[in-house]
Length: 172
Image 1 (spheres, one colour):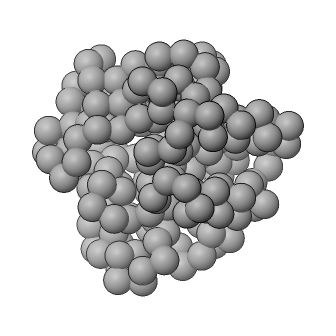
Image 2 (image 1 turned 90 degrees about the vertical axis):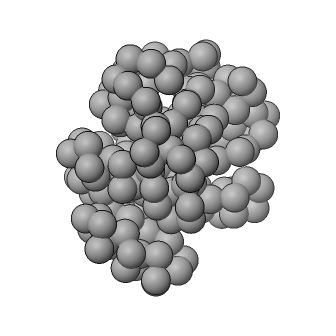
């Protein structure tokens, strides 16, 4: 699958690398040009802005956000939403409050965008060992993302699961 990864800190960069090694095409963006360059060296396609990232993705676009919770997540999701179209999917893999995730799902849904929240655990060891992911979102959307979760998890069927509607992933 093709997806954008926004936020190339320790976890985001390692997740992008694991996904790339798993055969996915990654378009990577970060505020740090050095982080983008490092992701490119590991096989990702670099994007030097949110707009460029969205332009490089084919519809329906999938974008995974791994930035600090709070204002950084809110700003990033707002910027992304302004460049996306109905049917595109936004994934928040950070540590957002579940109530914010519920609100975001509703607001983005009114624009025709799909939203999935993923409580992600694995730290810097996730690159080698895989990540544990608690996923919140609509069943059909989560199923469409199955190849991504299966690649990031310790094994294709273990280490991740849909735990309920939007907000549930961050609640759990």
